[in-house]
Length: 602
Image (cartoon, rainbow, N blue to C red; front, top):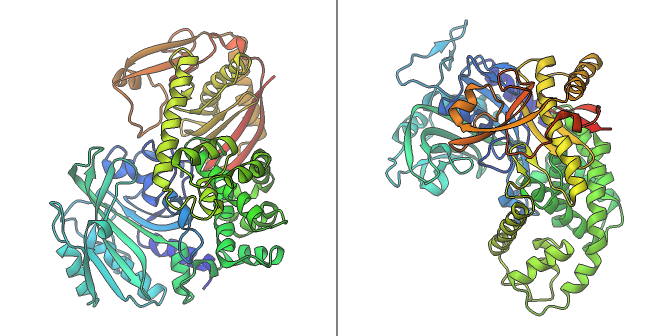
């Protein structure tokens, strides 16, 4: 059974049982509690907490309400915790997560049936019974696999033993049921706070394949648990691990999700050891997906994750004496395998351009850094960070290439703490340099090296506000921002739209922006309570936790009739006439339901 067949089988199985198929959200998460998308449930968090109604509120990836309280997706996911472990048979950074979800369950709700009378989950949501029955049916009947054993939460820290799940599994004929504690069988929250609860896990051939989370609680930032009024289901099954089990392997790199990449690596670098092949395959595949979703190398947040991956690849090429350009070799293979599902990968030219730019930056300092590394007899955490800061040497390379024993005591967590201290100093310096407001925006990070660059960026930053307003006027209020990146050359803006823009629509958006510029509209800033700000209709990221007082920038004479109004920390130009003429240079797909435009001012 191929991965394509399993994808289709999984989605259709749940669709037939009343679930709405929802496209994967971007790896570039708009959830402020995480740097990057780590799980399938993240795009559904507002439904679990009751902030959004799946039957009424528009879902950004669909452009319409979900139409059901039960959904299914295959979600692009990334976990930074496994970067240092990649190279064995199972650890990955990027992976796909198969999952089914249900929210709004009311205890005592009767089960519904299909036209044929077969049992199915009720449209109003379901909980443990239906979730376990569905997973058992899919594994044993659809895939023809045998469950070795399952695990349930044994009860800890005020949360009781999950007797209900035990009883359901026994009713299905599963007798090997093991009880584990909070570390193994309690999941969440995703990020610093959110829904969470006990889990039950399915093991096949000794491998944990499927994790069924029963969101009964909301975990607050201080770690305290509160009972949810409407519990829900959040399941996750790692696609790569499932495929390995299906083909009778323990090594995920032997599945058809990786084989084309690994074979291509073996062709161009036949002397590579197994561990290096796996590092290259994972990191290059992951980097391509990150770039396709709009993430760019930087020393901050998700951009830092991408930079770590790319620089580790470059360093491995040097240390393994690889002379082929692995970027150019692997990216087309990734695109060929996955671009039908994730269209953003079709833009191989841009993905390679981003990679090559990072390589150029890194290679210039790499040789000097590796030479400097050999001079140390013992490398402290401060030394390791200095090597990173001066030469770009990633922590992993310092550990690997340092003289014998010199880096034996270095720990990743200590290095990350040093990095965090450096970021705090940088932020404080930026605030001092730019009069206290800094340049970190809700819409993304902008940085300027001098006054001339700052002036250009202010023009382009204000342009993003005009752009979003114009897009909504032309395409409808379903358009929502999904990310932006502003530098001294251009602004890049990601937004929700399930189709390509027409040339006429692009021209209309351009005209609206340029007309607003010609009118030389004033740009105002007002501070008000979060409740007042929302009543004005100012755009903001839904689900984001804002402070009690927020800043709203509006473009126009009054906030009521403003061309644009958004929550923002600034800074901006004072009048739109300062911007110049705006040109939309490109419109393209980023991922399913997400489009991107690139804008310049002339």
